[in-house]
Length: 126
Image 1 (cartoon, one colour):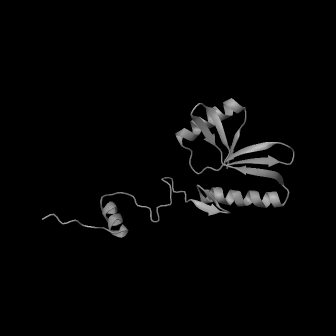
Image 2: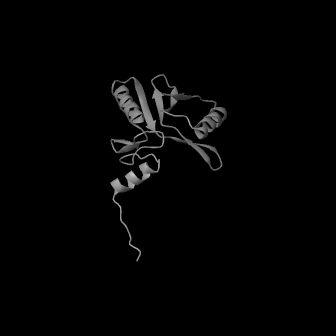
Image 3: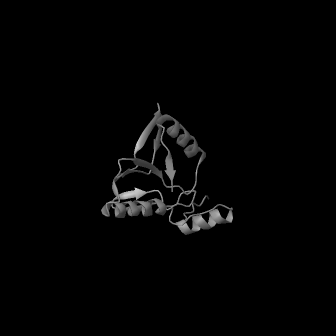
């Protein structure tokens, strides 16, 4: 007779650890260790990005900047786009494209090069 066994989350994590698999408690961390964070109804990919958002809000309130935009998307080619973390609009009329980085993937590095070549703009990494 075949007996079906049901595991709870803890038993499954123990099983994975016994097989040498890495387990993240909570399940809300990326493979690079970033923890999604929600502020003002916006979900950020990392605490670092959420903290930068808070800094921008303070800078805006202090009138250090004119404004900022969250996650603007740029079309690089047909079927290829790049989503920055922020655009900052400075008081002098200039703007900055910001990407909050903890880890640079090969995909990001390639898209950054295409973006900078196409739009003749630099991405500022923080």
